[in-house]
Length: 134
Image (cartoon, one colour):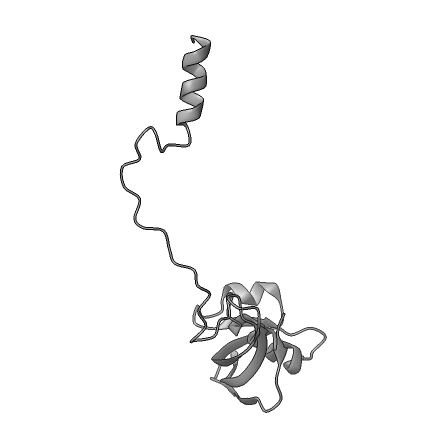
C-alpha cells in the first residue's frame, strides 16, 4: 500500500501536429509513503517520471498510434486527467520499497557446489528405497 504525500508536481503540455495525433506530455514528481520490505517500517520513496500519451477516441485508433506514445482512450469526449496521472504514479511505485541503509541481517547462501549424497535431501529417500529392496 502506498500513500501519496502532498507537494507533488505535475507539468503537462498538449500539442498536435497537422494531421497527427493529439499528444499530451509532461513530467511527474512526488513522494509516497510505503512500508519497507526489510524492516517493515515506513519509508518515503521519490517518484519521478514522464508521460507521453497519444489521445485516441476509439480502439481502432490505438493500432495506428506511434509506438513511443502510450494510448489514452478518450471516453465521452473527456480526458479524466487526474485519474490518468494517478494511474501513472501507481506505475512508478517500486515493487519492493526499502530504506537505503536498512539492514535486515540476512546474508545470501554461499554459491551452491557439489552436493554429496550424505547432505542431499534425497539421500533419505535413497536409503528407504534400498531398505525395501527395490
